[in-house]
Image (tube, rainbow, N blue to C red; front, side, top):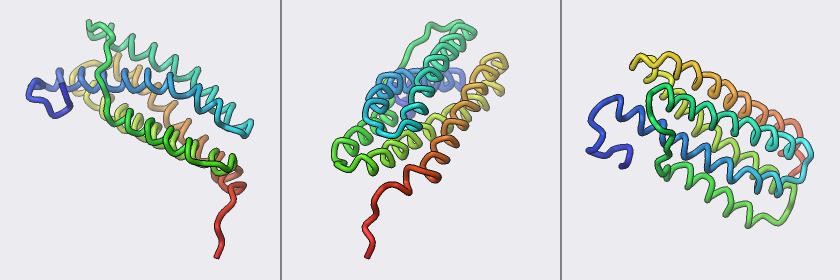
Length: 171
């Protein structure tokens, strides 16, 4: 059942579907982060990815709590968007020879993931409020704050250190 499926006829069904989408996405991110940790060459970036891995584990647990609060079993639904973002990141990372450029690419890939998550959680929080799932909205709000903080941390790392170290072609 896709996001624009005729099988979705109510806001409750749409909410559940998008919750399943982000649950799948978070679990896919859990599997991708160890590779990003392995590939990163700067200590600060590696530490940021390790920290986010632990945070993502907590976010998955929070999503499982959200499902339980709604009387649902935690279940993911395939998310082509996150699959595409992660697949593209892995492809690009495999094509970069200079480690300094690779770190900049890893930050860009991680931020693409963060931005996807931020949009999903923002939407889910709004819908949870509208549907009367205030406890679920609170759980998701914690995660949204973490995602925004992770994005900010990556921006700071990129601007202050990593992007500046990457060689540029100057004409």
